Length: 133
Image 1: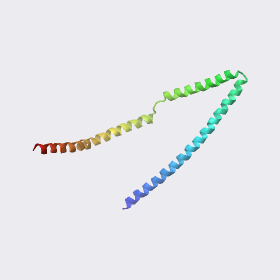
Image 2: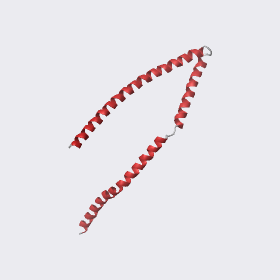
Image 3: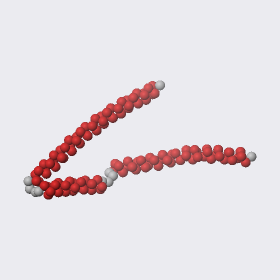
Image 4: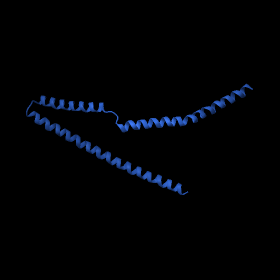
């Protein structure tokens, strides 16, 4: 009886922990979204500063081409880094652990699978024997 009460207390504590963690995650996501809005505004103003600075030295068309070219180069570099990103050691080890666990689970379940297939086969065999008589 005491262990049942302890399990209930543990489950309630875990539920409380998960609720608090989810509330904290919602707040973090909301703050992140607001931060992204300000980051976007800062990047827009940085582009404007570069635009006005370049216009003092070049025509508007050349200034626009320089800013667009710089953005394109930056985007290509980021895409290249993303494309060349490979799984790290922890990710590879976790995949190996998952594969090993699934293989072990399927090996452990094999006798049960055979038994579950054998029962219907035995029933069909018994039905066939009854019909032969």
